[in-house]
Length: 496
Image (cartoon, rainbow, N blue to C red; front, side):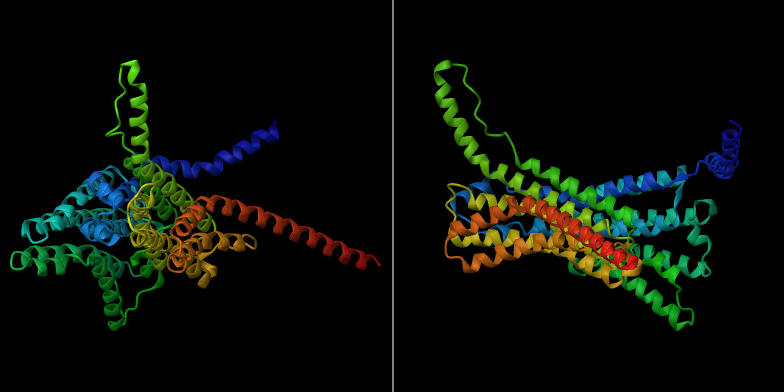
């Protein structure tokens, strides 16, 4: 009992300092920023993928596809404004998220004022898809351009206010910022990156009243402007004989922490995986008749409705299988990732852009190749090629992330002796499936073979992943048994 009391007393004295520090922080209403950042990542993920909804084929387009009146290219041309709007809003939201990362990489803690400012920033971010969609729809109107520019200005100026407020209060800053040697250069670089976009927004508003094309030229490439600004700042500092140290360079880079990257990616996958349920509607379903003699007619009407909706149900299951397994590959990859670099963050974000298009491609494909569809063979081949191309681009980014991490293995990868081969096989499943299916659309002469191969490869993908795990476990057991036998033989020779 005495030893137990002494151990408890030692523990209490060791924990007294952190508890006192926590009490002091609570007195100033200072909290950890982890939950606030996770909430922000969820909002950014929703705003980045919410424009997937307009990509859904409406009833008129489905009837045209089913009757063979339109081709894939005609549908893509008609859907070009929607796809452009999706990519435009995704890029703006992504750049806002990158700067949110920059700011809260320095302001690691939050008080009530920081939380209120962050909520205001998220409020304006939630309004961004609306203003951007108006700007794309009415791209020749200066007021539409001014609306999205003012919205973007408010978001970035709010981030600058959060940064300025945090820099004035040392208790909110991260320890890396406190230990920096050249803090003035870091602050100047951060404010330069945050304030250059509002400046370009003002120029876009001013020139849009003269010519809307010049206004778009100032506003559209805001992602490139941020990168150019950071590189220009580094060049200026080098010319002045004050090169940026490594810590300052890391704070200015647009890379995400591993945890926040996982939060953002999980948010995008979960939103896209649940938005595909929107395609399953009960509108147009026959209402059952109350008369008992009409049961046969009700059954026939229900069967006809089920045949019409079978393509949407098949698209739902196909999309969910693809998205779920892509998330599984991403999850397996990030078990080996230790840190994220700027290129890896950019590749991960590029893959998420194509992940958002997968439900649209699956719905398009299932309507073209559904039972009873009158679309010609060329249109069906084009639909298969589009879906496989999107799937290839979404999955090959994970292979590239792994290659970048392997190039700088000491800093970016977790040191593990086993599991690398298993991970590499998982990473190559979907690129191989999509490439083989795409190639078969040019080589196979039978339409049924191409459609059957695509469906088989998609539905057999879970079996392939299970087979990879079984094969890896068998190889691991064989390696362990061989190692034991080798160790036993070496021990017997030593005894002799």
